[in-house]
Length: 136
Image 1: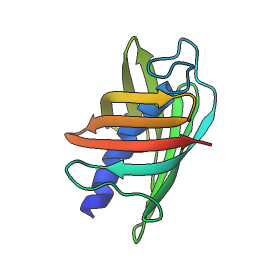
Image 2: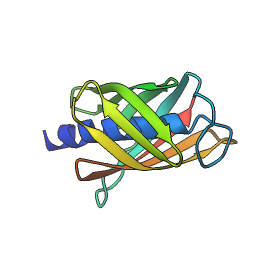
Image 3: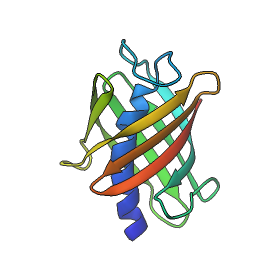
Image 4: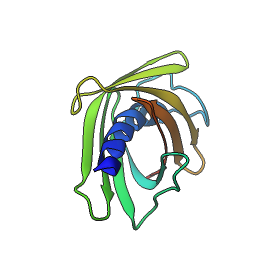
C-alpha cells in the first residue's frame, strides 16, 4: 500500500513537468503550447530507494497543451492512473491533479530533443520522485 501511495503522489507531480519538455530546447520551457505527445516509462525512483524499471514497472505519459494523463503499472499492484492540468510561468510550473484533488507538485526537468528522453525530478507532498520517459 505504501508503494501505491508514493506512486500516486509521484504521478501527480511528474506529469506537469513532462508537459514542459515538448519544446525544441534541450532544457527549458516552450514558448508555444505543447503538442500531444506520448512517452513510454523508463524508470521511477523515490530516493534513497533503488529505481524501478521495466519489466517490474511500465507505463505511459500522454501530454497535451494544458493537460496530462499518466498510467504506471508496478508488478503485483493495480495500475495507478492520474489526470490533471498544468501551467507554465517562466522557469516554473504548477500542476493540479483532477484525479487526486488538492495534490500539487513542483520540480525540475531535462529534455534531450535528439534522444527524446525526458527526466523529471519533482516533490509532491514531501515525496521526491525522479522519473525517466522516452518519447514514442
